[in-house]
Amino acid sequence: MTRSPVLRSPIARGVDALPRPQADWAYFFDVDGTLADIELVPDDVRIAAEVRATIDRLYDVTSGAVALVSGRSVADIDRHYPGARMPLSGQHGVEWRDADGVHRTSTVDTRRLDRARATLAEVVSRHPGLILEDKGFSLALHYRQRLPLAAYCHRLMKAVRDDIGADFSVQKGKRVVELKPAIGDKGTAMLQLMTLPTFATRRPVFVGDDITDENGFAAANRLGGSSVKIGQGKTVAKWRLRNITELMTWLHKAR
Image 1 (spheres, rainbow, N blue to C red):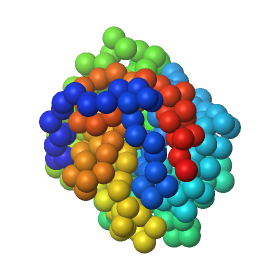
Image 2: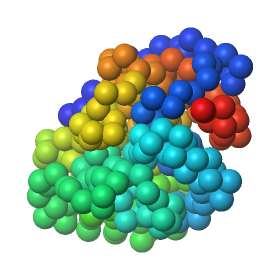
Image 3: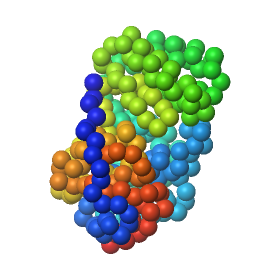
């Protein structure tokens, strides 16, 4: 089971406290909560055109050293970021696609999820407002509309994981709990992408907002890079910005 890194306070807050983003860095962005506001229904998330324009500009400035790293599937990232040119990593690194369009997946016995899928679907049918998101290699139970059921959802997902075995792990997030392959997290996802020639010799910077991004922050820090936490909460990230607007303001400084 993937262990979350030890949390600590960030060392720099706000756009003016951060160094200017450099063209020779490599950038890794979470999607939900980082490039788009979190919505009550996951499918309602929208990445604003001006945000996409900023990320596309950064892609050009860095000669392609930009990637999206998400818990969403690669196909789902495509739906929310149409025409994405950059590499994409989905489902916490279980699947990824490079800038040439080559798609790879880890070896996962998805048949193990069948029993879990049936159990969770039955629970969702009895509790309107809960949402089961089937990503193929992982299952996410969203309780954004039923916050009083948070503790119940976490207990349920732990029980389901115990039933199907240690090859899968429970991942907590903002108003969601997920059953995913134990081999993947956003740190390993970033390390996979760092093997690509465009990224390999650069200083990585990981940007995210959630507990699911902490392994990405830690991996970037270990490689001598850095990390940016969007919003509140304890973190291992070195820098903090308040919201997406501040992130876009900072990225516009890249030259």
